[in-house]
Length: 296
Image (cartoon, rainbow, N blue to C red; front, side, top):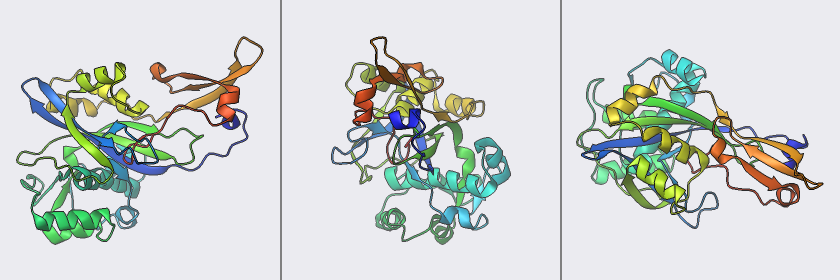
């Protein structure tokens, strides 16, 4: 952080990624599906997050290979602030990673329907092949005669990993409702626990110090908490500002003759950190990234 603040660090280019806040309505309001990263993970160990992951270059190389339903690619490109090929890749990552990590598939045999059941040995074999990158998402959809239902996604936010991190991700957050007939499965190899929880309850547990989360996770949970059901959250997504949230680091006097690094996320003051410059130079910084699918 100090090297960045002093202009001595060249940031690593962020990799594009997507993560999905999967919602299900209950009598007590909507609940969101979350995973806890295994304690053995080198990055964000023990943190709660949403299903997600990085873009597969194959989803971007041929924009006509993926069977597509919902808003056209050019509309998604405008919404996400990228070109059409990039928009397809980001949306594909959102849908593919939700299937890989939760067993939920936002696709159907036609533009008006959704797969009702993704359990069984054949589905699990395809899921494992996608995880291993032995099967492209386009080929997976083609083999099963399915189209990607991009209309089931709502773009919610965009976070970019701070420039001082060695591994950086440009991550789009989406919201989606659990399709009727489908259910989540605990299949993520990176998670040791999965839960359905009310956003307000998860945020309160974070505030009490009971749950570990990265800034983008707790920020989006707080934003979801005000919506009475999944449909309301999806409707609100269309009005959300997708200006990227990028942490900033600067040096300032600490008032005692020394300096400190101030780390801040524009628009999210609760995450502002003040780190003694000596501690920052030694590598003692607060976690500021996220999990596989929401590295921000």
